[in-house]
Image (cartoon, rainbow, N blue to C red; front, side):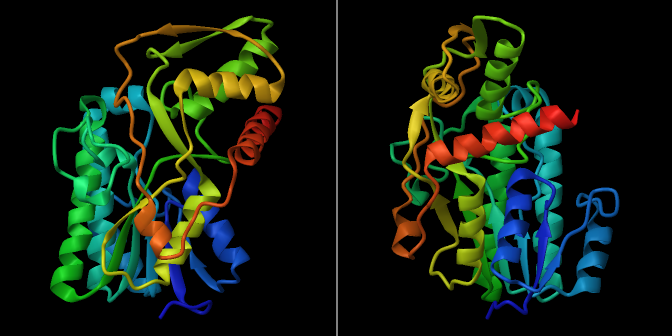
Length: 312
């Protein structure tokens, strides 16, 4: 049973969700949290991961480490996205099993589901049709991670769970326009336009695809909540039901900042999946629900970006 004295290894603690998980674990008074940076442990190196897990002997593992990015990065670096994610997952999940870890949380993404999936998306729709081509390598890696956890649970009676959140956002996000997800990119583009006295922004794609968003702290809460739960299922959707189109999000941010800019949509073939609204009723039935409203989360995300600009 996981409690405050349990040793918990958080892989990927420097990322947006990983740093939020560590913050929340500390808030919940967990005493023994293990983290290690890329410079000291390459998670794609199996023997080094195994050696580290053998050394710290964790009671539980939260796997938030991954090669991630927006539609452009996913499409451009297809080989890196499939190789690195498969390697990280295999090493951490198998290494956890080898070292007696019975409780593990594997974080994925709603992009594991088919491109033209029935909405809202239920967990049972996994592998029911074709994936979206631009992020297929990443999605296949994450699906493999789900099946790896399912297989270990089935064969060895473990408590490995795969949480699939919708698009996460919040403090410590990636604001690089070449590799970021859409929301941090919008925040940066709008603030830079204001800074440079421009009356417009350019957005990749038609701006019509719908996206559901979840604040990173809510994903962190879900990880801790389900780490302590025994469930009958391995795959669990983590969503909010809050969705808007890309262009609507841009207008929402502008209203939040009290400005109005023109929107020019370019590279209209870079839309990705049109809609991926998760059915989170399974997570809700266990007693978990997202708590952060979008206005609060957006304020925190904007302040985070502004602080990063001041530090530069």
